[in-house]
Image (cartoon, rainbow, N blue to C red):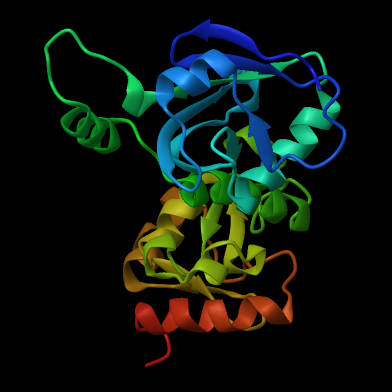
Length: 244
């Protein structure tokens, strides 16, 4: 395994090279381990920072095993594995946030609460949304499901049943998603448009009035549709009164 590089008393860098197997456990630097008092089975607030190009920087409680290794949640493991294997020259930095000392004399519990409120993101939310977007884009061929516009950086992987109202398995189901241009995404999210089981667009009274301004037409339809989309589309229509 590539040697860990200590950056401070509470952080270290993990090179990717020589990482060819599982990516669940990551050893910590002995000095960091001793300073941070890693204890088997506890959870510590850590920040895992990757190169900016990977768009992956997470803060959460990670479990410590054997008193010295970090165990990553499966969702994060799935995201890390291809990054590690395809970018052996890179690395990430682990920082133990709840072990840092502050000049203002606040105790660690107070600082941890502040960090959680102001900086922490949940692993499942951040990593899950990235995985969801990747799968939705793959299904739609990196092009808008409605217009066919193929500029991926402008497209939004929109949840049919909103993330906030979905169970864990529904949040990450790519069939609970449509890849839409921003204006169509906004219209769909607000319930101003919806889609039938055949993929035909359904226009609300407001959308009909604004149709010329938004380039909408009653003849528009999704470029394709899968049977697994149907329950989610039915829920969307019901939520906004299209099936009444």
